Length: 247
Ligand SMILES: C[S@@+](CC[C@H](N)C(=O)[O-])C[C@H]1O[C@@H](n2cnc3c(N)ncnc32)[C@H](O)[C@@H]1O
Ligand code: SF4
Image (cartoon, rainbow, N blue to C red; front, side, top):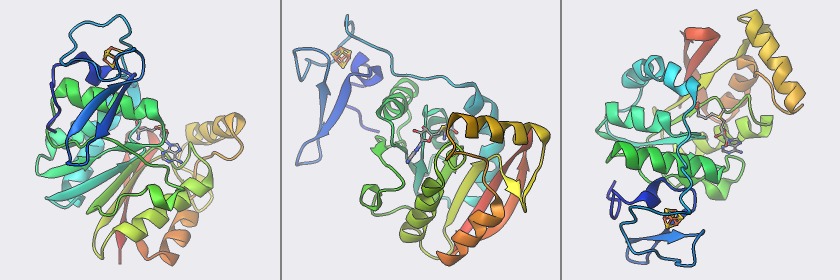
């Protein structure tokens, strides 16, 4: 990542917007102060609001997921991460897979700001600026990816988001390229643990359109889009990593 003024506080601030110039350069635009384009680098600022989220789950699961990614992702190319959330996964995976370009994304601007903050703090050069991607919007997807990774989205979003993810993967990936998903799943109607069944109920209480998805349902929809389930890997805490391949 070639961030202009990497030490600037702005990179870690929720008020920052990156603006691309026509020639591919970047402007750092502030949405909180009168100075729209603050003189860089900013080392102190009364309006600074730290964008960096620190979530316990990605801290806990990142190494077990990485062990799968090392094996199933292509050694080089662009890995699109759908629903990056805090950005903890993005920096960890990009640091450990230095020949890949990691392209984070999220529908939520606070998530994207956090990804940016993590990238700036950790100074990871192979993480691109996060893109605004709503999986259900075909126009929001990038043109190209060599692999797609998505953790913990399909159950905390409507079913249409799972279908949007499969549609996007089918469009972007070439034969042989992987879509890797991670999270809690049901298998042929069964939960793998009582805690996942309780989690499913709690998700549905929060939003009736959410819920732990059945791999059979995902696989059926995936197949119609030219994606096959190649591997189902048991992970700690009753989660699974699913490796799908474009055929
Ligand atoms: C539980 S978080 C998971 C974040 C991260 N992948 C992780 O495992 O820590 C779920 C993420 O899904 C994102 N999300 C929800 N609906 C989405 C959509 N329609 N398109 C893209 N991302 C979405 C949310 O913004 C949030 O960052
Ligand atoms: S509020 Fe301050 S730190 Fe944040 S983007 Fe604006 S100038 Fe930078």
